[in-house]
Amino acid sequence: MTGPGPRPSPGDDFDPARSQAPEDVYAMYARLRERCPVAYSSAYGGHWALSRYADVRAAASDAQTFISSVRAVVPSDPRGLRRPPLNFDAPRHTPYRRALDRTLQRQRVAGLEGRLGAHAARELEPMLARGGGDVAQEYGARFPAWVTVEWLNLAPDIAPVLADRATRWVNAWREEDHAAVNEHSEHMYRIARDLVAAREREPLPVGQDPASSLLAERHDGAPLDREQIVGALRQSLVVGMVAPPILLGSICAHLSADPALQRRLRSDPALLPDAVEEFLRLYTPYRGFARTVSHEQVLHGRTIRPGEPVTLSYASANRDETVFDEPGTFRLGRSNIREHLAFGRGRHRCAGMPLARLGIRVALRTLLTRTRHFELAGEIEGARMPEVGAVSVPLTLRRAATEAHPARECAHEF
Image 1: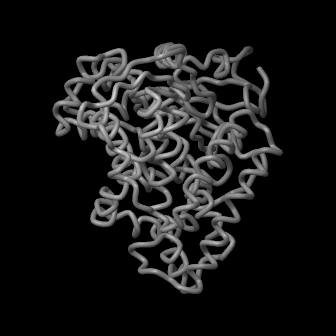
Image 2: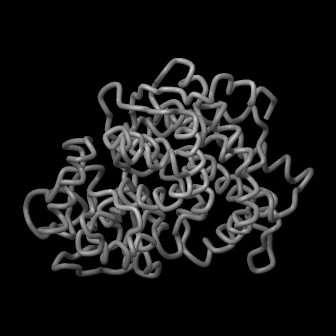
């Protein structure tokens, strides 16, 4: 077995690159949960994987033992850059997270819903006009850029640029193409630097603007480091762009295979909040979020040493049959649905949870409202590490009868 330091037994326990088909990945994690809950692979430079719900939740909740400052994702940024708050441990992590949390309070997020609905309708229209397209790569990639632009108060012309650059960056990351990662990352760094400079000149209310909030934040009485503020905003430009295309693609693939559920959600939008939670559990796109240990740990008889990446397989944990009955089945009204780990747990739990929930709900509601039916029109492509799910989902769309002239409703500028 390859990897840092001696291994407990010869041979890898699993191969995360063997198949990217989502069902194959879920089956792999089911085997690991049963037979090898702390598993090792030499892929991506060597890493461990925790697959059981209890272990993943405990590790995510123990920020003193399972730290984020050494490795936070497998595969990681090939340049080894560390950006707050994801790549920082407390207490360095805390002021950045506090500043971002201020801008994600319920009232502020709820106030974005109307504008996001208009953006979603406009971004879906090209697919409706053609009668179909790739819902993950088109609608699922373009609409989330508006969620980020609205949250960060960026100029509207940045949305299509962000959608393109973030998609290219994510693909380059997955393929470990260092040159392409650099190119697209630097473009997003320029957006972040321009944003900081603009807010230094004309700050906005801290509860309404992440850049202004970061600039106003203090740690031990001193302002936060300007370049780290840029890094936090650069990270913010990407984090909301990775999961939504995969999640929306997976949801649409599911609803294509279950037209009765599709009709039910279309006829009763009040079910959407509960449905989104179950979809988040069922199609959690993360399998590569990682930690390292601050000191040697023995878990299920395996020894994990400092410096060795440990992936917290949230996608596996949310299908743990000891926690969720019939975990591979979509079930509205699960009594313990709020226990899912789609957004992680503990200190590094996703700061953008309320915004992510709103974005997925608006995207799905718009798709259901403006269609009378959709179905698969080709093969689904699965995501590579660090995600799992559907990254390409071709659909045939049937426009709703009331949508004769939807473009007129969205002709104004944003």
